[in-house]
Image: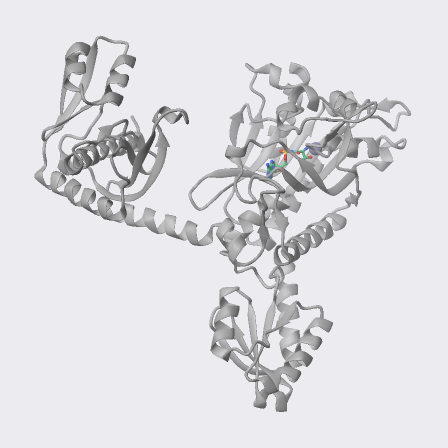
Length: 584
Ligand code: TSB
Ligand code: ZN
């Protein structure tokens, strides 16, 4: 066993043991408590109880104290086995335990005892109650017995537990940081996006400030794409059912699609991907090898029937706009195009300040061929091409079997959120299938028809998912070029409002996003509010500034740059933007 695996097992036993100690404490405090189950989980443990009254924060503190006492007294955890018959007697007043005993197949029931507390349990546990590590009870939640909403609602107490106090503190700090940076919370506080129940879950509304950030991102990425030889197109968000039958989405992606709309003579579906539309744009004219590669890009809006349980803020939604492109190229151009996409990805990450990511080759699961279109040979060629393209670039990657698209393997770029959960952002996919389904061709140098390959790629992922990530990456403090409001002009008194307005006009004329805070509040309050809104620059104007054609400049960070002539401030902001957007 590796050292890591040993540590994981040890932590598992500690967390499990703490769950027993907690159940004992609850039973002592509330003798009528009915105990359900109490497993270890990631970062800690929980236990479910049926209790005569709702638990309060004060109860948690009491339970905590009792647990610590039990830990200090350092009882041994002792294992024993009894027959089911004996177990039924022993747990006669514990209905949930009786149900669990009935579910045990063996005739032997395994028990663990510490102090006088006995629980049904397979173990393993630590040796003694003094060895459970450092814990904290975090919260109380409702949970149905066996997760079934037809059953009784139980009360669940969650705890986190680590081997040492330092590790526990570090974890709690991470959780707190994640809570502060949570894009759903910041999305509300900074007025970036919202949802409405009459519109529906997973269908976000982008508020003016969020829309500004998005527009800047869109202008940024489409600019890079134009430089890299992409042509931008527009296409409608829906198509006939037949289109998706032909593309294979109907057979392989239907579960993720909104059901068709029945019209007079046809069925229409909201598109779950943009590829078929781009393919038909390619096919709308004849192509010669000289045109290739054809790189068709679109901020393509698409719709997926994500299950309600997996929706989360902006990171997983049902209506989304992908920074999409489909590259139609000759087979011998695939590697070069792949490399071009990777350069684009790197450039974009560099400018956005994205540094933590990993490469995942998402491959077909050969034991689950139903899920995929195309034959073995096609998959072998596509997967080999992708591996070689990655190896040529000298990039290391992990492989994820079963994560391919139905039409081909993908290079997925994975980012972890603050709690370590991974999601795919950029993706580059090699597709030999759809060109065949749509009978795509180009005329080769030899005058004969050839079949192109399609590279599907998203650089920024969907605007929704990237926005969620960036909000958390920056903690809401967007760099100047992305900030929805780049500067707030703050007049010290009402008599400075006119000058403030002129300052705003000059900044706007220089294409900067500026607001005037002419509320009748005190200057300090205005500065505090601008800081809360994470506005990069605060430009304070009073008598002195007005007389000098200047503004007193304060940065979001708290730095005070003093009074500077307005034209100099404009240059400074413009410079900062140019530098950020050309960083290398
Ligand atoms: C790249 N046809 C390709 C395209 O040409 C495609 O759609 N690939 S995809 O299915 O992998 O989706 C592209 C990216 O969209 C994913 O990598 C992921 O970053 C993002 N995405 C997928 N589903 C969602 C969702 N429900 N909410 C937000 N973003 C999503
Ligand atoms: Zn595609």
